[in-house]
Length: 419
Image (cartoon, helix red, strand yellow):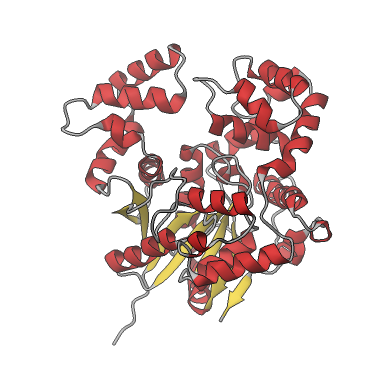
């Protein structure tokens, strides 16, 4: 009997890996018939402009202990971005690795045909859509809100509530995954499954399947793993969280970086801040004014937040300031078709089989040891890799145990291997 290897791709943050992720993994394997699973996972800073609860290697280990076979890091220049750039980077890695047959993502609608139809409109941008989008942006709406209104105007007679669909974050990400697959001309087949029980932004743990938001809130509020949290996570996640907390490598919170960010803003000129991604229309002056009046980023955000500048967008901007990111770097990472590498964080025996397939099929370097990568200095991919390293160097400053906060951990930490 001939064994056929079928690789499923999943895109996630696993902050932390919980029962909802486990449901998604098992359901995805079931509907796709996959034999192997590869995950693209955010590093130490996440899509909503937040620091991860624990570091990327520990979160990757959670995933592999729960059934993922190979975890590849999503570079910082994509992981802490809008849904469009986040999806572009993650799907690009899946596609360029040449080893993935299908992708399955969670969505609130669970209707792939409906999502594909909307994604087609977003990809083609007909004149009616572009005109409506401009009109809503001119009214001062944020881009996500303006885009939703424009789509409602274009698709009002199609038998479903476009606005309601776009009000759910996993539906929005799903559309971006589909757009990215189309833009790359990828042969990866998409699937979606409907989210169950908890919504993305739910803050209460009401059942064994709870949102990561609720789980993090309970952990950060109590400083420990309460019984309600333990009911919503696999035992392997609990064990890894307990270990990381016991040695002082978590929980890491955004507050740990507040003084660093405020001090950088107070030293910066308006011209310097205007080169930061997503800073436009004089926002740099509002940021500088807030930093002069307030001593914490939490207080600053309350001053600057508006209908045009959402809290998530502003939190990402603060992380960009922390890591000294400029708009030129971000624009190139999309315009020039990157990312240009696949960085391995964790794998098991089946993950090693995927890596063997990638050895002959990937069109980008596969990095297992940072100290041995051969990406030349001066290349865009090298600049991207430098930001991954800097993200870790600054992230570890948030560890409660300062002895664990030494720099250069990307160069001395090997991928987690679980035989």
